[in-house]
Length: 338
Image 1: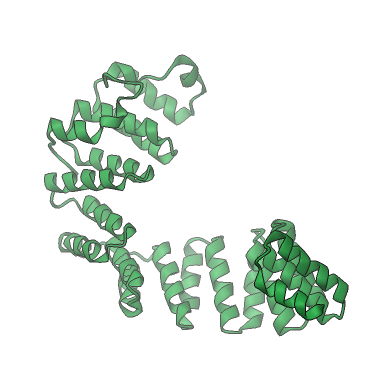
Image 2: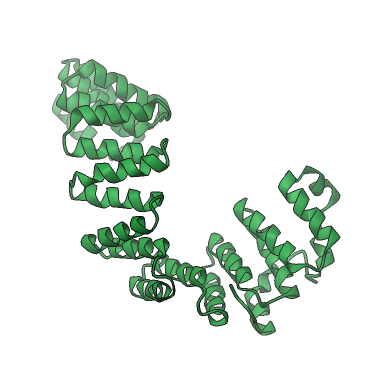
């Protein structure tokens, strides 16, 4: 991973960690007795390892990764300061440091850590791809693709590299290249859930029936993925395959109280099946999940209007405007009714 760093670089990179632990000595890294007593078992075990070997930088790095996984970013940064005061030559430390910086929206510091990692180990694919991901995040696709290609020269079968290249092409609106890159990603890793989802989204945007296969592959990997079931239902709805749309949304609702699936079922029953009472049930279900769901109130208003229940329709449209006074469909409908 990484090997050697100047003391000046470390100090500049970690200047902010001085709060509450100015010396950065190994002995300062233990938790208080009360905190230790209430710590999770995994953290307790790491703390005990540190107490037994307080000069082992790998243990502080191990605890920093625990803090990163549990979103305790300040604690993680403090532990990385301790680890790197003891040993500033390991690439893995800088990768963890970059993740921590990124998690607290310090992208400049994350970039500096990754660049240092790469100068220490020019074949570190993880560091190269993290830097490519950072450039993707700040919408610099040219630099991102440059680093991705650099990673692929080292590891031509790296699925993540092809996935990230696909995401760059997607941002650049080059759908054909985005699909090609994502397809290569799943060729390298047939369990790549995110790549199948992106392929589904890209094909659905073209109303290409291959979207169904890609979403079903995503569901093969994560059978209860809310986003995959919803996306599949939305694809069927967009291509006016009402039976499959209803069936897919209904399956989703068996294990997730999904307000959007409920709302879309209301829309299908209202506009396509003219089943107004059924549509009312679904819109009401969506409102029960989210009492401020303006579109669902509007859907109920349209149902009542179609059923010639003008007063009820008017009340629903007024409710829309009480939630969002600028909601234009409700304004127009009220003017029409009055």
